Length: 299
Length: 299
Image 1 (cartoon, each protein chain N blue to C red):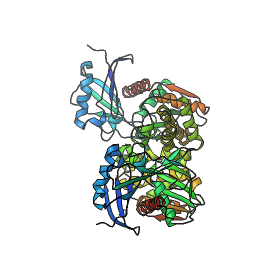
Image 2 (image 1 turned 120 degrees about the vertical axis):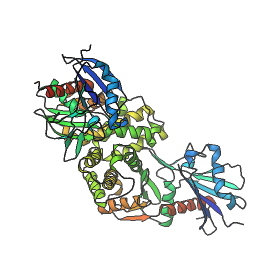
Image 3 (image 1 turned 120 degrees about the horizontal axis):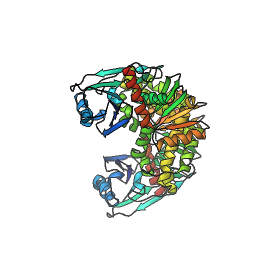
């Protein structure tokens, strides 16, 4: 016996996370694995999923996934919806399975034609945020490897923009010459603020500020904690300069995990922007729940 | 018998290059190895050098090196000169050797206190350029992994700035999500120009333009050659925006290798800047020759 009515799945590039949802919409089971989309061939997805959920199944069960599992290299391609559109667009793709108990579905991502941009997974978090915050208009910022800035109005995604800030931070702090001057942990609020204000006041000079971190450490023996926070401040400052048309004069909701989300909050509040922080996992589950209701025709 | 009067050495992080110079200042021998500074412990430098030059020695012979060999992790630290200073500063460090025939010397690098910056090796190319171009005033740009922009006046380095453009290009094109959208070879002049003008006209938006390269390729199947040239244009455009105070209204000499040097030339000429391209290896040898003359008291 199991009280799992349906299965919610967040299936990204490098992680798989599943929840068994009961009839009241509560997660009563949870499991994770590192079987991300990157590791799996097309015919391995079902086994990777069943390894986590098979004991939860008690007859035919709907499963709904979001994320890179729906990419061209994923289990099955779920074509993009095009902005402007509701975050879950029209697309819920049914995926054939070997095990008849599994009624597998994948939610579509969203694309924008000009400027060209794509998302997969974040649209579900946006749907979750809007399910919990009816009639909310403003800008949703989803910080991460590829941070998304999303303009939401009247329940639709109007436009969005992706910035590779998180990925650049990882590459520069771990693999460039700055790796010698940046710790993998540690923080300095003052150095973050300094990097932030430097990059925001003269964003065009960013490229000239990075090597400074190395040179300061060589010449002045600056602490490596300082280097890390300064680099983060410079890159987030450059991001805020680039996305000013998105956040200026708007409500901003941040869907992201600490500590990164709180750096964005600090930076935006410093610009006088009203910011709400929300839990990204709760938004994913709420968004998958919205997908489930849509599939079942529940409003 | 050998006609090698002294030995010129360019010893960088990952390569060692030596020339046997005759009494007329001509390179009559040449050899290279991959025994860069990164691979060697302090007590391995002499052997690495002698493996290339021992057959050239016919009695006590002066050897002069520039580059990372003089860093703290190198053979022996050659302290930085501080701007404003002549490119070869005051510092020629004598290095003790096992083999008495080798009279080893290392040229100092240059540092700048504010903003903090350092160079090792480029100062020798600058000295070479000035030896060949007496009374030249202007800005020398040395494109590479870490591009240097150097303001030179009245025979001195007045100030300089390092940009990590080359290293960022390598990391982003090979290791980020853009690697899927960028070839390792190939080029498109039109895509380079487009990236360049995008970054120069709105440098603050650079961070938002990178992911575009990936999204365009996903949605429009843009050629990977185009992605490579566009990324280069965006990063060089951001560099030119950051270094505008250096090049605006100046003579610029570029000391660098094709094809990178020619991309900088194209970009600067597009801004109406008069540009001279020079051969970086010739400048290194000329600079080491200037160091040799200085050591011998020849003017």
